Length: 421
Image (cartoon, rainbow, N blue to C red):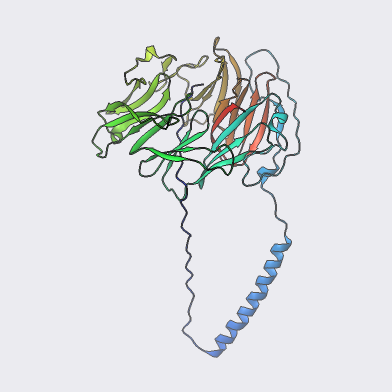
């Protein structure tokens, strides 16, 4: 299920945030007359009375719930698409009473996920990156709500960058401010300890392998800004493995060389040459792979860059992300130009014929992340409205042509699915 990697990452445990100290400077008055002293005493007494009244008023006022807590879960809603086939889409909306979302819960449907979405049996792993932390949550099909299995205080680690989840969703990578690449093994259940290790230094760009769990690649920058940079790969699932240098570039990281993706064909690397840019594909054996010889067809995009060919889409259409169904029959693509005002759209195509099966877009919302279920039946994607800071996880059933939308308490950067054990 190759799709362009989205970088994200985390940090080591046991680091605390220093307590903030607030210094209050008292006001002094140089006039020591008794009259002012009496007035001050009366003002103090009156202030205490007013404070008591206000405090009592606050106790009497009921606390309201957050608007997102009151959003209903729409189960069985047909996909808001423009189907390319002649079949009509019948919309049937069922709105069960949603439970109140707690601050530690990203989503909750009130009963087992597999009951709310018949036929869905995968475990879902999601990465959220709110301003104050990195979070990895899991959702078992037998559970009604998500569970937080990993969290890192990003304020304490100011400047670190998330490098994302691996293909299995069991590892998370991040780059520290000093360029150290950290990999965290995600625990299977809340409360279990997570292992962390440093795998690279002076790291400039990172990519997890699109389909192979634990396979990681990165470009390490030299200590001198004018020195060459090196591409490495590592199987982090093998504790005896060491980083393998694949290629050394004449350019430094500061001159403009970066890793775009890491697939079965190898590492797609971009570099700047004066006022233009170019790409090369470096195979796992450290040799250049001609683009025409890649196992998956590459085409030249609108900006003269190479990207995976998507059946049914023209080379001039700006493809932001691609997700291939595990069985290879369908492909989903997000078509979006970040400088354009048009609403981003998600298209689902038949790989063999290139026929568009469905198209979805929502005014005011961006499509942030997507993934297929392990059986290729469901397409999961996130819609998020940055103005209202509200969004939802949408699950599109290809068999019934219906969707289920679950409110999300936080924005999600990545989604991974795996067959539940």
